[in-house]
Length: 139
Image 1 (cartoon, rainbow, N blue to C red):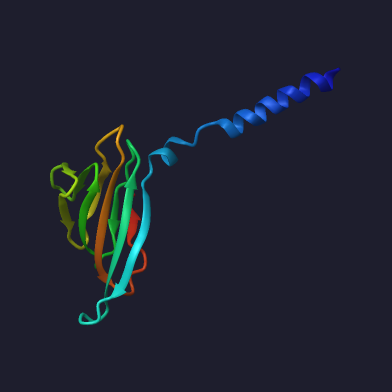
Image 2: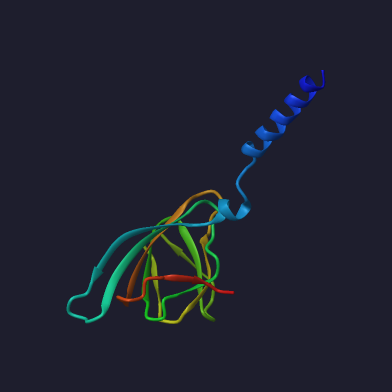
């Protein structure tokens, strides 16, 4: 008799674990996809790397810096993105708008400006070829 009571309770507990939503951090993180990488043959030791950053509604990047050599051009492909670089103001960029980040910049805010519509941007890095890690979280 006890097995009949315990088994359904265990099954319900296991089901609730697997049915639970992902943590808030996972649900609000961006998805970064590498799109292109090529050495710049007429500029020794420099490369161009391109990534696409997808933000689900309400998603945001953690505050971060980029490789010390990185000059970055960011272009909003869809939606609206809020961004703050160094001590600048927080700005909202719409589809077709862009900004740049100089080497050594701190990107304290980078997020989807909407809680209902996805956003996507393309980030073009001009970076030292030896710099493999493009982004480092700020502690």
